[in-house]
Length: 260
Image (tube, rainbow, N blue to C red):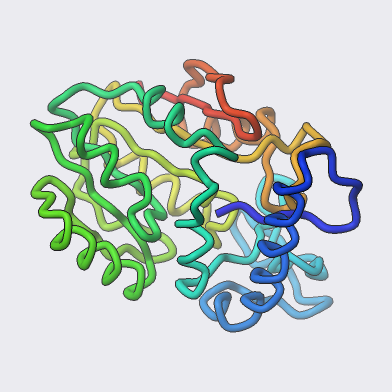
């Protein structure tokens, strides 16, 4: 669910720049209603408590800091077309992402922030003896996944309605958790992270995919990118150990973490 930045000189082909402009326009329209469930602290509000603190919100953030990172606004269900844009595979090499996932045929995979199920259904083909749990907090997204599941006749995808602090997964039930371009939008990353760790089996993996925050050539708004260092800091705070960083994608990290 990445967001294209503004105000920078494009370094990618012109076609990509046009798409970036359209993506930014879509997000500008969505910035209000799509973020209704996010925290929106007022200027001068005291710390929100726990691992969070409040700051004056930046244009694309909710004014809530976690481990030094401001949490971004979230893309709502009205942005579904952006997730399914025809050029996405070519731009982001989503095919390589799916091929790179550390999966076994009988794995249970949770696609957190599944959106339209863009990744859930291709992954289901890689786990024919397992299951994909397509998790989203928006009922509208869950409805889209269900419609797609019925249309495609895929038996091993199940939609799950989570909430802002819990994905709704049973303890020690999941082999792999995948989060693609969504973690930076979690309004309660510590609580959600702890719930995801509980859902992982011992030795289970969490695969975090985010636009590269340390790369200025990645034309995404800063709050919708993450550096590898920041991602590792936040995952390690949950007790997950970094296993590897897979560098096959043009604009994103694939960061693999393992539960002890």
